[in-house]
Amino acid sequence: MSTPLLNLPKGFADEIVAHALEDDPNECCGILAGKNGKVAKLYRMTNTAHSPYRYNMDPRELYRTYREIEDNGWEVLAIYHSHTHSEAHPSDTDVRLATWPDAYYILVSLMDKRQPVIRAFHIVDGKVTEEKLKVSPR
Image (tube, rainbow, N blue to C red; front, side):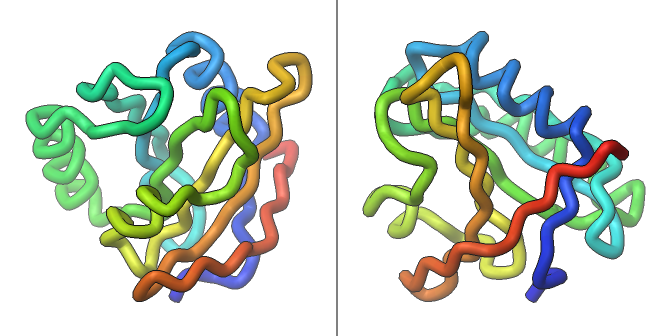
């Protein structure tokens, strides 16, 4: 598993929220990559589902992103997406489609667009565990 506390620099948290608000009313999606639990880069992905209820990352973008992550010696630290009209908690579909047991799943809720809520989870074998998320200045 990853570290028990996800330290998310404020700039990346702000970027996730901005992405969610820009893609609203559809869900946004993306990847955070880095090494040793430290985020190095955020990848905004295209939601090819164009849906307010689910996301699907563009396969070509995903391929290029994985290549860059591998070339830099990074790992996928987190997969993020937004919930436009529900809480920041994995849906049944999110749980069913989760394939990265070592990565965090970050969800941002836009139920209150003035105060989006960001939460982090691990999803392993259908079991959802909320993890501590600290938004830090850096």
